[in-house]
Image (cartoon, rainbow, N blue to C red; front, side, top):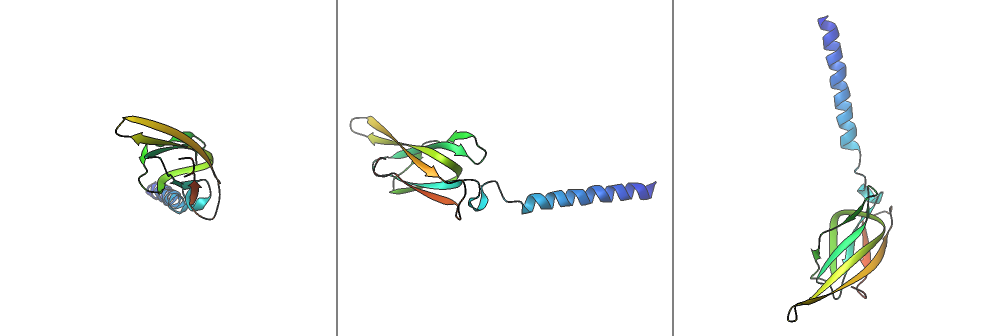
Length: 124
């Protein structure tokens, strides 16, 4: 009886180790540019941007507003594929008004790297 319990416990432990090893060695769903890309967005007029599109899980998602003080703004940690919509907001502080703009960028689902450049400075 004890030998049977030890044998079963060993089998369960081995299965748990193998399952854990499979999880460790499996790449994330968007790793190595195989199921979506992160984007870098160029802006000329926008003080903030928001990116919306399909992610690596085929769900439509949007970022919060992201400050875009430089010509290029990297939007890391979000994995996009297909056409994304980038919204830009330009603030006019003295008059307390703002202008919104939108542009589209195609993000390939698969490529050799993890980043796609969305050069939309002419619009945003």
